[in-house]
Image 1: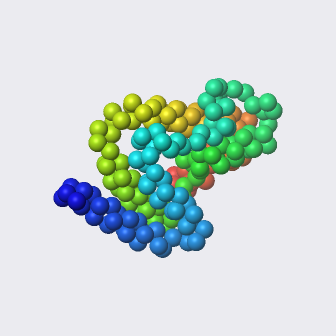
Image 2: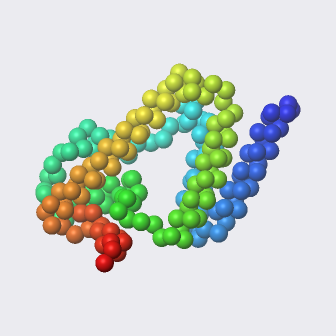
Image 3: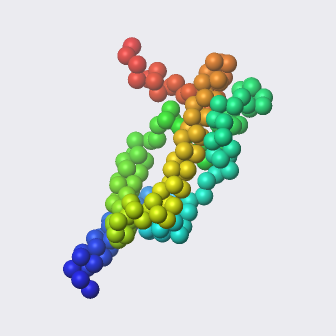
Length: 183
């Protein structure tokens, strides 16, 4: 085994061990999320070769075609339901802050897993060219566009809800902004 391959293998082993250390303190209900992120990091080279593809939510595909479409029923209940669906696919919106303790653990875990993903991707020479030729780059752009459309749709619906006088989640959550404002 040549020296570069040995170093890469050693670095990968260190990153996997660091990932285990960084995620060991997470609660058991977070274990499946962490396992999913580790699997995601290890599958990155397969995605770069377009041998494994991330699925795009049917909801995001639908929203991508017209993120500014008026909802069928424009009332607070309907807005809440559609925003909840989008939250389920996209994760929490920016107006919902994570708990401080959880965000530090998450940041540490994400940093280590990101390094592991980058290391795994580093095994592919001319990665950018390979991604373009294999179609993985186009797939990545499609996924990003669908996620952006979902985020835009959620913001649009929250704006409608705020205009209609709806309470959160059908309008932006303002509690944190009010708590941070000078008195």
